[in-house]
Length: 94
Image 1 (cartoon, rainbow, N blue to C red):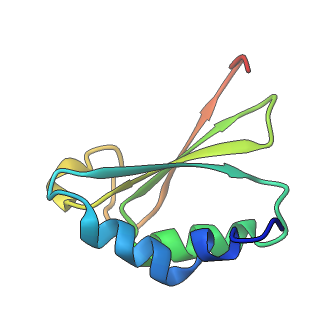
Image 2 (cartoon, rainbow, N blue to C red):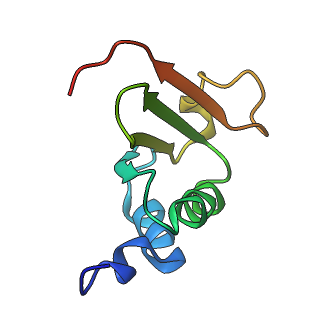
């Protein structure tokens, strides 16, 4: 991990992101699935945004695009607000 990166994946960082967003705000992050703490980062985002998270995966890339929504009214993509929603992009290009 590069110097300074730990702060950018901490629970406090994601909590602060949620706090600083406007009520209609959406945080977008590009996470590398090969990062050893990848699942922990996702768990922190889920925690900060009360599970209002959409994960977009591409079949040909280890990257995941994570959308985290501050306001529950702006989260229509999940059928159940308590369950995370994952979307896979087929044939996505880099």
